[in-house]
Image 1 (cartoon, rainbow, N blue to C red):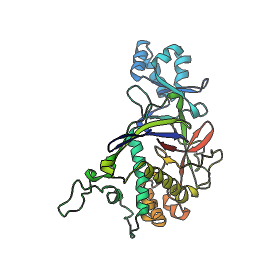
Image 2: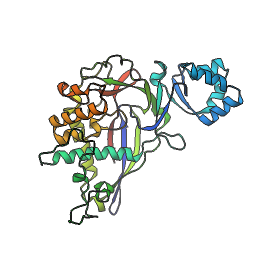
Image 3: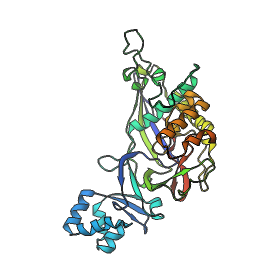
Image 4: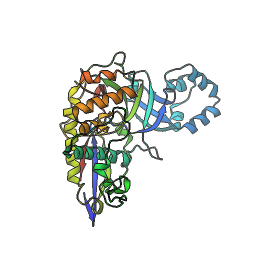
Length: 366
């Protein structure tokens, strides 16, 4: 519910996760560094300090090193069956446990973990959500711009000229009287997003990652997915934030209503310009027909770039294909123009034997 404090408008913002959502913390664990149990379908992350102290105290360091060198697949089985470690001891070494998801039906893979706080509680940083809101608002602003002649060099890796749309405050001027293009004049100074409340571990699980081609098929030799799992918030999870709009800065240019309208426009534009080129793979879920905010890892280049709305669909395709070819020269992006879409793969998560595009969330602002 909104609270009014003079110029401050404070809202509850709720994300309802509709497809696996991954906000990574930059850490990766190999298959020999986390536990998964096929019996109960759970995966556990270890407290590394406690774990290695335990191995030292039990005289198991050499056996663990041999386990690592032999590239064995299941750390839990090694500890319980080969070393005789009890479930009680393992539980004492565990930081947290979540649903194993695909990890119990596939050979184990490297695990990329979700953002967590000092108490090992999963959460979404406010900066991640604010970045997604900024992108959808920018798309709306770019599409409303009637000027023509937008262009970028194909090898230009710099950001798009967002300052034209965002740096609109008159707090710092250049010598010629024009608005300085820096964060001091950014409208988004007036938008504040808190970190989310913790996401319960019951709403977290490991999900596989898959590339899907426009015809709904998987690239050659990748039907079993990429060699990694991601720790994700699962469909149905509700994630809560505080959204503050400082109208002493915004002057009505960004409101609750305009943000919701920007999400609607982004969802429509994404469907009409990008996702329409892709046939869903066999086993894909049908997501609710609601405006979605798309964020997090796996959401793809299109969801985070202004190339298409800024340059137009044809120029945007050519510019994006050139960028993809430069960054991933072994992935065949030089053929993207012929295929009519770039990037030419969409990222899917597999969760409970169903496929979902990554990062779709419904948004409520109350």
